[in-house]
Image 1: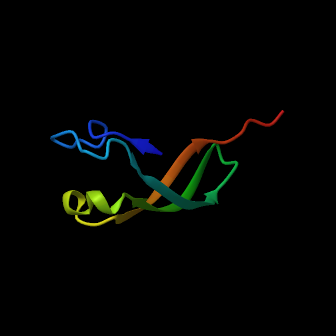
Image 2 (image 1 turned 90 degrees about the vertical axis):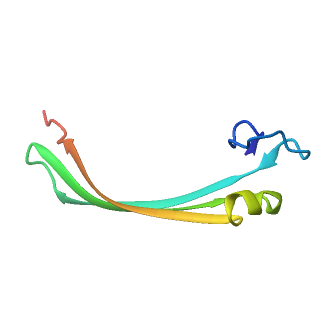
Length: 80
């Protein structure tokens, strides 16, 4: 994806103009409870962000990441 200096919250315009940035994410949810009126799932997601080397000094590198572990609650599907 292409982002400009304003979208990347840079304090001044950058001579390169637009920058190619990336986001790569993978996740999984496992249902623990189903069809009891509410479904409960346990999940995890990991994400890696990339930015060009020209922004490494500002962002502290060109690869960053994060993860989350979560519980998902949603109504069970209604059966007819």
